[in-house]
Length: 130
Image 1 (spheres, helix red, strand yellow):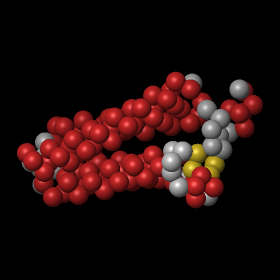
Image 2: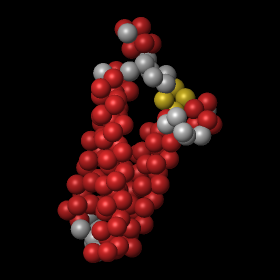
Image 3: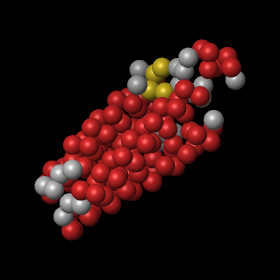
């Protein structure tokens, strides 16, 4: 299941680039709801992959990671169907910041405070099973 966690990480990095593409596209060409919806759904898929990876790995994770990601997902969906340029740019920009913050929570380069506060472990059954 380590490959699932690895794919979650790499797919998440790709999604950061796609969110940035939506922002740049909205600035230069105006909103494209089809692209915005696709990116929002792709982030949803990575959220599910991350949740599944969590249940199959014995790796501690900070509560901040899912909280920040869920906030970003909400903003992405709020701006996904919009054709209002300022709303799309605002929602996707704040979502990008939240996604980078969620990445920083568990990244080696991220703030140490996230790694020591509000951390939960996977279930004991998963740890014993390995």
